Image 1 (spheres, rainbow, N blue to C red):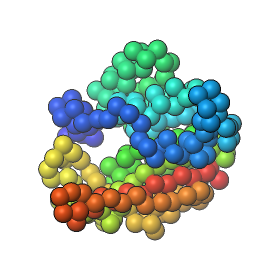
Image 2 (cartoon, rainbow, N blue to C red):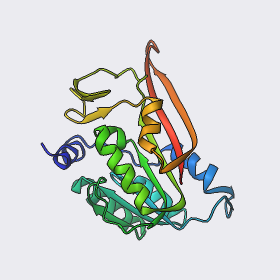
Image 3 (cartoon, rainbow, N blue to C red):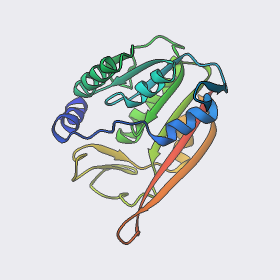
Length: 228
């Protein structure tokens, strides 16, 4: 199956999606862009106009930023997911530019955005494709712009599950993501991914253990960078 067929299956057959923004993206916005002080007042951390949700899925993060008053866009390889995103934004009365496309070949002009966010996307492609996607992000973001991404860590309990497809890379063998690529990042690989294009502002790990015995650990990297 092609990449877009795989993701269309995930969305259309398994109904795998979330309908509220990821907490770490909300924290990223409050830390580096704007923080809500009261119901009608915000503290502006830096001027931001255009925000792109890279690998937007059903559009939940583009919709979050549009609700916060930004010019939001989203792109995803799954036509099914993008149709959901368009329908949702229409129901919300929000004007958002959603497109179907490959994140390694972005259909945007140079320096088009102030902020790019990418939640759980670059770890679902091979490392060489992730590098191309980051290179494209560097091209379309303005100097000094912000890039948020989160990635599965090599410390995650699922490391090694499935068929190996490269260094720290496996094809998921079961569950709703069966057949998809999963790359598990080390800290060195994060720096390799960012190359010279982005300067890290913070790199954190968020780990939690699952019931019933709390032995199985979910581990992710949370990263915010600035365009060099």
